[in-house]
Amino acid sequence: MTKNIAIIRGDGIGPEIMEQALAVLDAISEKYAISFNYMDAPMGGEAIDRFGDPLPEESLKTCLSSDSVLMSAIGGPKWDEVPKEKRPERGLLRLRAGMELYSNLRPAKIFPQLRDASPLKPSIVDKGIDLIIVRELIGGAYFGEHKTEMINGQEYASDIMGYSRNEIERIAHVAFKTAILRNKKVCSVDKANVLDSSKLWRRVLNEVSVQYPDVELSHMYVDNCAMQLVRDPSQFDVIVTENLFGDILSDEASQICGSIGMIGSCSLGSGTRGLYEPIHGSAPDIAGKNLANPLAMILSAAMMLRMSFDMEVQAEAIEKAVEAVLDEGLRTGDTMSEGTRLLGCHEIGKAVCEKILSA
Ligand code: NAD
Image 1 (cartoon, rainbow, N blue to C red):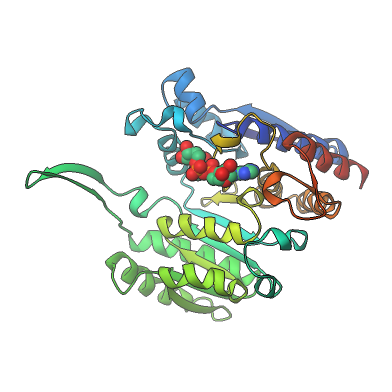
Image 2 (cartoon, helix red, strand yellow; image 1 turned 90 degrees about the vertical axis):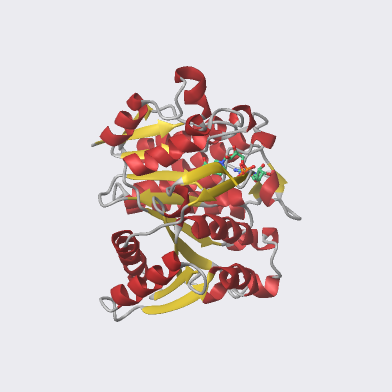
């Protein structure tokens, strides 16, 4: 059985961390006699430089013909001045829309070994952090109309945040189905005291919840949620929210788990093909220096095996290897604490491969 994986190597630290994720997949391939076929799909800054387009047609076709897409991160200061429609992020937004990936699942679970890397007090961390953010991915302000115009002699800019009932319903179902497999609690996050889109969001969540009587639904305003995530993250199981709120809250949730370099994510539509990527960006400040933490990228590959390929054993093998590396106190700079040993991106990737092959 061969799985065809579209590979977006990306910009900044992207190629370095992708190299480690592919080495890990090669180790899985060797250990379990599975064949992976990697198909390059240039996107972002690299694609702008080579083809003048952040998402060339050929790359979109490659992604649409693959069994799943594995991506690192794109963008960087080099492309900050290119016109808005040609910016690297436009490529990613077009890819998400082109693949109709409307749900983004971002787990935030602290590895016990990283307790001291969390900025939260040990008394808070020790209550447990194990939540998942279900973020709507192709609606809201990122996909509404963006406009900059002159009104009354001065510049005025606006971005429309809109949601249809259908868009809310389908992400609500993802959240409830995710909760059924976990602790059966959904917290829907909105700003229903101010925004009409949030009022509809809340109404639809209440309606859909009737179909999931075993799941407890609560509602929270986004500003309160930002505060509760650092006050007591153990209260959350599944958080479901719209695109912009989810983007912000998931960065916060990742940092309380020790580092943005530890959290992978998965974006899905109605089928099994997904887009798997770490939640961090291309970290231009540390690119090319062998300093990046490759574990979020590696854990994204594990999510791909589990969620798109139904390879639970192999996904667990990667996660256990990551834990074993952390158990040995091996770290990149972002997760260092007293008594641990600093290694580079390449060396951490190699250590994960060795653990997989020797298990
Ligand atoms: P970032 O996530 O790239 O970096 C934020 C901070 O976290 C930096 O200090 C960086 O060094 C650190 N960091 C991030 N990933 C790390 C890792 N794996 N190991 C160790 N440290 C890590 O966010 P930013 O600086 O706001 O954005 C940089 C570029 O990335 C921008 O061009 C932005 O548009 C792009 N970006 C891309 C994506 C994506 O591809 N999905 C997401 C966010 C940002």
